[in-house]
Image (cartoon, rainbow, N blue to C red; front, side):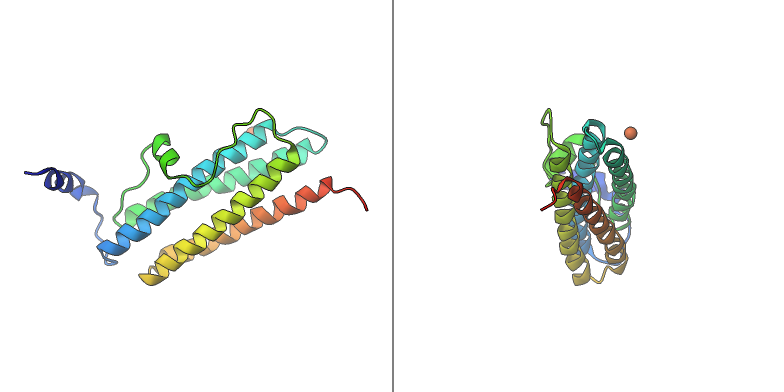
Length: 175
Ligand SMILES: [Fe+2]
């Protein structure tokens, strides 16, 4: 038996039956797994800033970022399970996340509070853009269930971006 046949036999047990078709499973799962990596990366980045934020607005920012990290984390399990319902396989490890994530890490020793909020606002806005792109893939295959989940998550990402935008206005100096 060749490698390909061995591999397909090994993974056959993980192929949940779905009427959407092999190509839909492949394309939608691929897009969702990349999004899942982004959600994990953004979760940890938001927690990183929650832990390291400082300054006069500490309490507000610290609590806002914790609330946002919780919302981001709560999305991860439904994304992974959606992939499995479609007959795909999902992420296995932190290394797998690192290979797929498009959200960039910020390992700087010190980031100003306003830079933290601005960076996360941008990350959430880009995440919403990528979810809209994934929504288009779902539309191609008439996968209304994934599309409907994405609509909620897009709204949540836009809400996070809005809160982050308004919070940065604390730092504006009066004209
Ligand atoms: Fe905390």
